[in-house]
Image 1: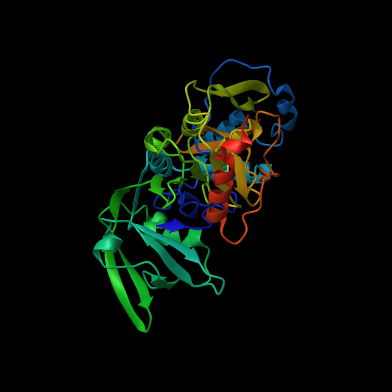
Image 2 (image 1 turned 60 degrees about the vertical axis):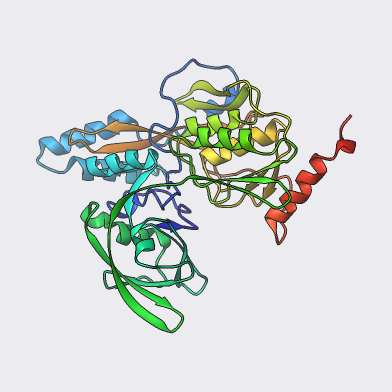
Length: 395
């Protein structure tokens, strides 16, 4: 199941509802656990970033202590940790059960349990199917793009946030595994019917590639899951030599930062991608040498472009590698690190922030595009690429 507005709210300490992590190709992880390296050399670049570190967030040891004390008193360590994180005001802090955390890690590997639907909430509150994953339970049942989703297991979904609808479909509240059933109330035109589907383990398709009639290659990255970087590199190598590339990051809510750096390496010849601080210690992320630096490149972004996707956008923009078209990005530039609690649950706490190569802070600000999208963002991207590829523009 997928949402067009999958992560417009901070992850809060909601058991079940908090675990709407994968929306059939969209990883809902503003800063995924383990997404930033937890070791590495300090770097002097962006040294002022430490001033932006999240000093109000609870320290990991404080949360562990609260959990340990709760366990000693016969209370729930996880609930104690949730209260500590909630009181801290850490906007991106979250606590996961052991099972939820395992599911989170599987999501980063590009897998999820569900029925294979993408959906969005319309302005009138209706939930509409926007895509059906081939080979999924939803596809096998004949569900189509444009169908209206009215209910899940008898619960009306009109007006609900997409995240809650996804939670119902996945069976998060019951930790429903693959093989369990879910009944959907659907409508197509005047026809209304119920369809009972069996949840399955599905693989996400986070990178899709298509070529436009004029030769431009469009690389859409829904999320940075395992292997995304390699997929982008392959797409760039196979793109026509005389045509540009559109890197579509609209709605990309983040994921594995290592994969975002690998993606940057497809377009840069080494150099700085971002600096970041972890509890004040300065570090840096660099692209590998050998990327395609000559091919015209446009990056498409919007308000759903978050976290690792913003980091990639900032790197390409700051280093003059891409023209960025769209609306201001979300503004998720903080870093979370995990800590394991006595009962096996895991707390993720904010420990710092990252900055673009020019030193720009992203958290709470987002990335400002170079150009507005206009009514047809992709058509404008083609026009810009045509201008970038015009030999008269170069010496």
